Structure formats: structure tokens, C-alpha cells
Length: 364
Image (cartoon, rainbow, N blue to C red):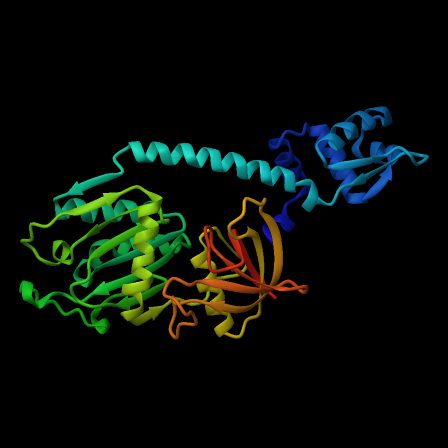
């Protein structure tokens, strides 16, 4: 049972009040919803208000699109509008507000040290810890294996929060004089990442947090003890997207997988689509059929987002071996709604038919 289905009446009433309904409005609305359609006197008895007051309340609720007043019938009946339709306008309005606020937030970020050149290795390690501890959805990290002990606890905390962690460890550079044992069997990988790969030596170090901010540096900065190269930190979504795309397309595929987490518990709600794709892959390979509830819209449009529900019948991905995708950055779900099959990608998808901003995976 989902969190929404477990919500008790008191909590539901309070939540409705957060979105502009008075306590009496919320009580009356729930009385209508629980009956689907009823006379004003029946609603009045259930809500504990007068019949005349029910008409006033339901006129307001009808204006907001929550109910319809069938006054052509005798006696007048109050009918609840399908919640998907009633709350669709509110969702669309919230999407508009979110977009406007996000634009202002990103403008603030652009003006607030979007790029910074960092000379100190110790500063970069501290930034790594700080950024990982701030992650809410996703950590994409490639570092020399010798640096793993310094960020292990931050990575483990991220995993405990349910954050998706994709980690590539580069072998130590022998030309630097470092003879540390970096074989997979020597590394403590318990709980540090969703998927861990051993990459190629000499790969640049990079980090992306929630595809919003991070850093990039030459391999030698974190590998050699006396290197004079610099790192660049950034706080721009566009830069993060390019960095992650390059990482998944070029560095991730050539690595050797050495650790994969167990399938996450269901239901799983995620706003980062890669998390949904990886979880769906793990569960399907374990024999679990899945239903996906997607808050999505047709790709390349300004259409309002809507809820689409269907069974996951295919996954296209390169996050786990063996890969199922034709391109390094292709990560998508194919969902059968019963009427049609849709290919779905994350926000700003261009290969798929639909883009989604939130996915809920449940057992089918």
C-alpha cells in the first residue's frame, strides 16, 4: 500500500488545508468524495454543517474544479469530480510555479561563483565530502582508488539516504611512485555505491551531484602527491549534464563492474530517471514484474504533465552489464498502458516518446 493510501483522514484534511481549503471546506469535500454523489442534506449530515452552508461551500469547490453541482436535478446532487482531473489543474499550476522559481534559483546560482579554480588537493577532498553529503538523488563520481578511503563514509551515508551512486575507481598511477595495492579484492566497497566499476588509469577525476554541481580535474591532481594541476568546481546544470553524458558515454562503458547493490525496496519513488531505470533493471533481472506510475508528457512539447500508469515491459540501459542500449547515454523504460506501448526517458529526453519528472515503481 502506498503512502497516499495509508494517509488517515485527519492528515488528509490538514493537507487539503495547505492548498487553500478551509477546515470545513476540506471536511465537506471529503464527505462528497467518500460518497461519489449525494444530496446536499446527506453531505450536510456527514460534514456536520447546515444544508444551506453546504451549497455555499460546494459552489466554491465547483469553482475550483473539485465538485460539480447538479442543480438541474431534484433534489440537487453534489458529485465529486475525478481526482485525477480535479488535481490536474493544481499540478499544472504547481509545475508552472516550480519552473518559475527554478529559473530564478538557477539565475542566482549563475551569479554566485558558478566556476571556481581550486589549487589545493585537501580543499577538493573536503568539497567531495561536502557535495556528497548534500546529494539528494544522485552521485556520479570518478576518482583514483587511493582516494576512496577519504570519501567512503560520505558515500555510505548517501547510500543510506537512498541516493543513487555510480562510482568508477581509477587504478593508481605507478609512474607517480605509488605502489598502493588497488586491486578490486583489496578495496572495501561495502555500501559505498549502487554500482562500482574499475576504470582505466589516467582518467580525469569528476563529480556530479544531482546533475546540478560538482568538479572536474586532471587525473594527476588526485593521484600524484606533488602535482601542480588545478581542479574546477561548477554550479551549473548545463555543465553537469554534459559532464555526466560524457562520463556515461565514454568512461563508464569501458570499466569493469566489481560491485552491484541488491534491488531497492518497492515502491520506489524517484525524480532522477536513471535511478528508476537501474532499479527496474535489477528487479526485472530478479524475475519481478513491475508497474510504473509516471508523471510525464510527450517529448519536445509544453503539454502539461499527466499521470501515466503501465507495466514495464522493456528497459534500455547501459548502467549494468550486460548493457541493453544502442547508445551510451540511452536510459529508458518501455511501458505498456494496456492501450499502447510508450518509450519514456527523463526530463529533456529526445530519443523517447515521453519525458517524465517523477517515476514510482511498484510490483505488478
